[in-house]
Length: 227
Image (cartoon, rainbow, N blue to C red; front, top):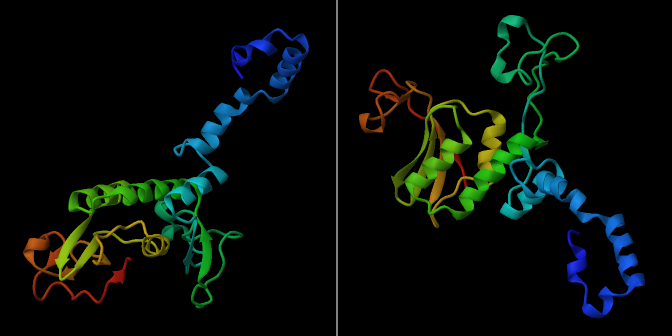
């Protein structure tokens, strides 16, 4: 402790035995030495790792693990390689496995620190949101920064829709449908829709760059329930 002698009672301050014992104890414990490490590893959510993020996850009530049917990295050739899925896409010899046609097994997937940190920050925002369209869209913009357009829609009849104009990965769908990070007003059913630009039939008020008219776009086949 710093300036620990200022905390002594008057009747103890002049005792050489007591002050010597406290001085030795202060040197042995030295709590100030680990304060910065504690702050960086646990208290500061922007730098916390491992156990520190697990603590923050319990505070905002979001788990690190989700159930997802993610296929293993498979063997393939260089022309199929993509930087966006470098770890999960096609892999070279001694890294990827052959595709035997079997469906991937649903398993418990533990999120890495960076993904879990983003999830924690988003869940923190979800916990205090007023569920207005502006707030929900700000939440989506943070969660999927740089990915493309995504937004919340009021679809009436006590329902709402989270629309994503880009493809979501298997893990992202699992996170959105299991973690509870997509808030909704009380009593409102929230659906999750992937509507890639220029692929689905729809009306002009929803955005001409998203939905196509008759004889061009196909009907949407279903939505995932988000909450």
